[in-house]
Image (cartoon, rainbow, N blue to C red; front, side, top):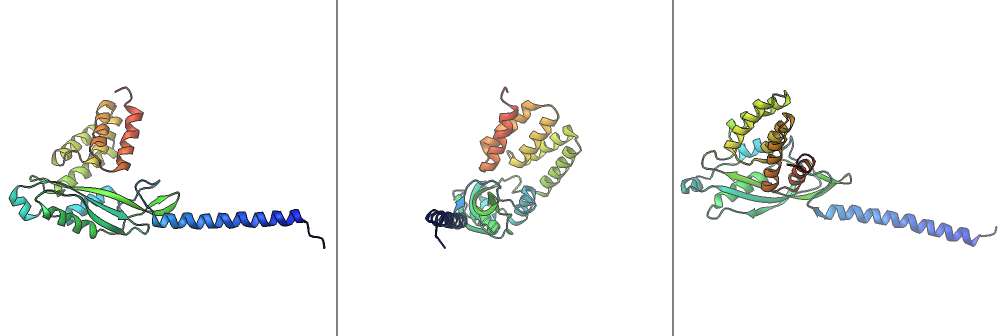
Length: 232
């Protein structure tokens, strides 16, 4: 049997090609496991969504007595990694309130006790993603109150029923309790937009871009602003 040199060379190159593809695939998978992303195709989310996260924080985060007595208030930032399996790791303070160590303690305790998140994914593959979460306290309301949740629940219900004026009024009440709360601004902007008031919707999206610390929220507001507010 004669051996065709060209056939052997073609077979050799084919084997090398597929071996290279397999190696590259393994390297890509390994890199995805090791790398911590900031922005991915599908960002991590708390089980049940943002509102469930607020409910969790309202239950778990307390106003430190020492800080309340001192009249301290403000906002801290906690950074953490949502791992590819949804567990949280590398939890640490990104920004603290001067003279208020109790705030940091409460924030770290609450984040550390969180249930597993729905992990983020890049090109369909679960990956680790770093997030930064702001937690605020005010002397008037503490954190998120039961009243605030009831107002938001009713506001969302009115929005779903297309009772936009009623929804806007309820979202206004929620924002008086917790100014510049990103979720409320998004919902109020939706109510404004659907009621034909693009100008006020644009103001809310612009406010979100100014106050959010989350890139995904910033990009979402920016996209709405670019679509509806070019001439505003």
